[in-house]
Length: 155
Image (cartoon, rainbow, N blue to C red; front, top):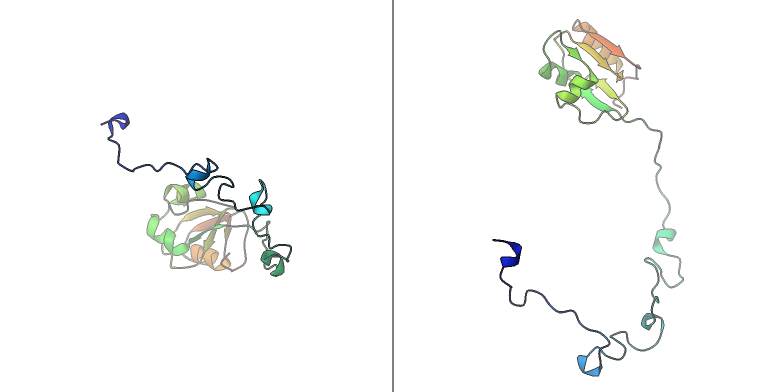
């Protein structure tokens, strides 16, 4: 069946009201706009939020919050996740994490956190890591290469 072969649905499309088409149409003369004044004229409506000259609500409410445009956002990965996904002695880089589906975006880099346990010796290359995560990797006999050492915080 093709689009041009579809049967017409009865009352499937309603004809638009033809405003201003004579007194018998029910919408003649002023076309449903009433008589005179701002609303009857073309271009006679105010912008959204206009309250007739009164101070609008969005200007009466106080401004709140702050957005730091310089904040660095890291993709977070935990030591326990690496334990489950990689074999002992394997090389863990940002590319292998992307390929394994452990991070979907690297954002400003990848940060390793200390959640979970690590028993395998892994060679890890990430942008940042918490001090506790570095200690866990080295205790398991692995090696970690960083571009920057971060505080022992989550982000």
